[in-house]
Length: 394
Image (cartoon, rainbow, N blue to C red):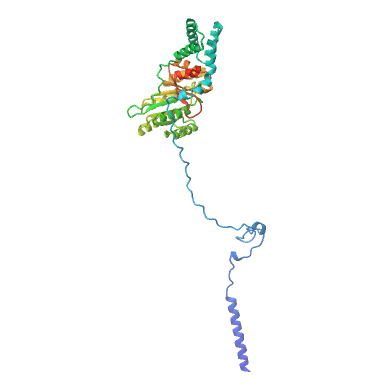
């Protein structure tokens, strides 16, 4: 009896001990990842750090996968354009003769037709003079050419087409003056490069002329540095850069709005350092009526002359502007001592007589003519080739 009681007491004590131990063991914490999310519950709706769960249709295919970072690839600069070798200047005007003849044939054919007519009365001679004036030969030159032709036709008494063509050719050549020095001075002197300034009003093609002139010089075996002194137009510097890259010429340029004189000075300095034969300075277009801008052009020339002499100041004129071009020429000649004229867009006008008038008024020869938009359409001016193209002389 007593033994049974003892066993029961021991069993009860053991049972109590085991139960107490179970109460002391802590509950295992359930991590956030193990919590069963509530479907459709927005983030932060209850409890700190509550996690938003997408609806089944939103969750489909939306498993976030960490993508590897793409390797950093350095941009590859575009390849430099291939350096071109332009054709030499010799014979350029002859090669472009057909284009010149096409633009001037109304002028030439009209004169030849009148001179070869059976009857040369006063009205006919007045008409001849009018054609010359319309072609921008100028009143004085037109009168002199007409009187010269009239005298020679009267003395020779000829109406033969070939004879008339020879007479007209002779008169036109005399007034264009083939004896003027039309060479563009691009040869270095000692250790100094020749310096060519390109000037003119807006829109006549100065930057294009500077680039094409560089091609002419490189085609003749020379070397060039281009100075982008038109700092008022960023596009002008970009355009000149392209021209330079195509023929392997260095280009000196600065930020938009920089001092044009400093660009020109640095270009000449670069030319000396590189041993270049010619430095071409492209200046900003300016209205010939604006005194301040014209004075600035004079400053560019003075600053350049501290480093090297300026061998050429080429005034670019649009041949289609006629009399207005002549007024521009006068003002520029007063400011920077123009040494030569470049007539652009000669293929787009029948007013080739401007050559005679500009030379007569300024005593400055036309040295270059532009006959199109192609890179090699700038040619040294040859009076005989020009007159022959007008008169379609074989």
